[in-house]
Length: 371
Length: 156
Image 1 (cartoon, each protein chain N blue to C red):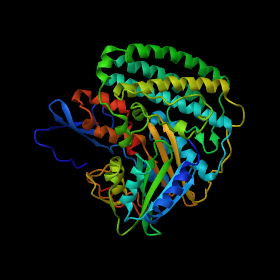
Image 2 (tube, chains in turn blue, purple):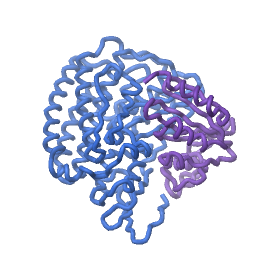
Image 3 (tube, chains in turn cyan, purple):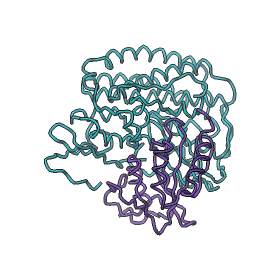
Image 4 (cartoon, rainbow over the protein chains, first blue to last red):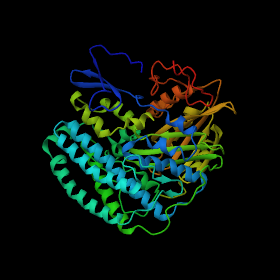
């Protein structure tokens, strides 16, 4: 990136990509003393050209590279692409497969939010123990993933027309066992961290994003809901089994870093409730409609939307009747939230020391924004 | 939320501003699409924001049609109450890829226009900060998402 000019009396600090808290991006901070005057995000360190890669793969082959966008959240990403393919091919998904999809998506949401939660603890500087706790508790979900799909991270479990395999025997009981275990753990997290005085000091009233600004700047996901705007694709445009599940859109009104963290925390608790409901009420039936391996959907355009852990993901699929997609436009949630992050310094006074807290409250995943 | 809102929007939009646009249609439920002329691009965008309430900028991107000798710039907008997506499109001839920037209406389109600029070579006139977003600063390989991109000059 060619850097914008520096204003006199302003110091510019290059933060990342080697900083432990920055992730795979560089952030330029213009500092006026301790205050952040301006934030410039330098994205693109992990740009792999996924949109171009997908143009050179058949529809089924494309599922593998697109899931690499967010490793902690692969089912949600893959589902968005698969939904677009299913719409193009006119495939009906069996009901049981839809419930299994919701189950796996919610498990991935817990996995991803726990990771974000651990990083948020780490970035406040006082709670490296919490990061280790969340890592250990995530292992429970990864173990279930391994049992169900054969993989711990990149699942490739969903296929156009359903899911790859049915639940193994006794899987429902294991889910309920794990849900009960995590619920006990969550009380600990809440006491040790969210209601902890030092954590409150670091997060309360930091980087306030008012609802009207969140909408104007195009925030999405927990960032938008942390500003009190109740927008969730799972409710607005129900996919998989979300039309049948009991849940509500979680919002917090405080609009600060703490509110965004709390939204994630409460979404985990809600995801556990949904998992329990799915384990108890999942209907019987087939899990997959066969789709020809080299299918050629008819020409047209199909836009599908999914609520991933980081917000609204959109896949706009253009087909021309061939074996490969003509173009796949991916609307990534992190790219939208990074623009909000760039403008936060103008909306509220942010100190240099608060930057790790603020950026982890956005929960960016740069492989998602760079594609 | 009534399931008719997208079609209602398309009808009322066509009656009020039909002369300024090429076409307006409903793709399916929750998806509407407006194709606008380049001359009235900004004017109609302001109408959409102020009159029809499309205040949420979602995303933006382009698509290349070399056989028809045109590119299409697409902006994705969302209505905060009705929650459906509007795809706001404008066609550009391939030899004259110039467009007024939409950041003057929705400033959050900034990143998406920067991306379309480096990936497709579309010039956005009046954009406040037109620097590459994802590609390296010394990139000489052309515009990667164009259909005629062959990867020449990349591995130097």
